[in-house]
Length: 127
Image (cartoon, rainbow, N blue to C red):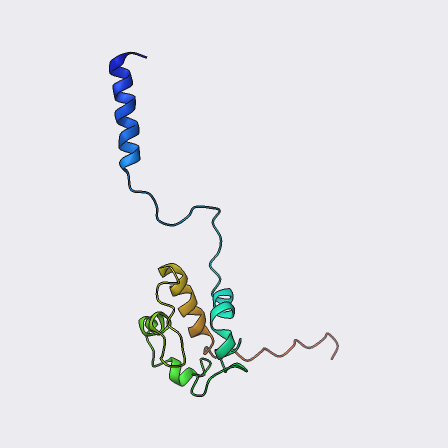
């Protein structure tokens, strides 16, 4: 390799090393599951259905209450997850990356969504 070519290659490698690295580890992409995040971090107190768990401290919010949940913005739900509700709800701070936090907040919101009534079964032929 000639000296000018070696210099160009070394400068190119140096430029690559100067690029800031990604802060999060890389790996295969995986779906962010609001249900999984909720089950791991929230269900102990709020219950899997949002109505309250067996270990719920007094005053734990019923996350399945559409009246209450409709008054909360998505940002307020995310802030409550980040900052907690002392003294009973812990603050999760920066435990969740923003995409995970958004998915978790959306899952919490859907716990209060009214479920459509199931449609009646179609009548069998000849009835």
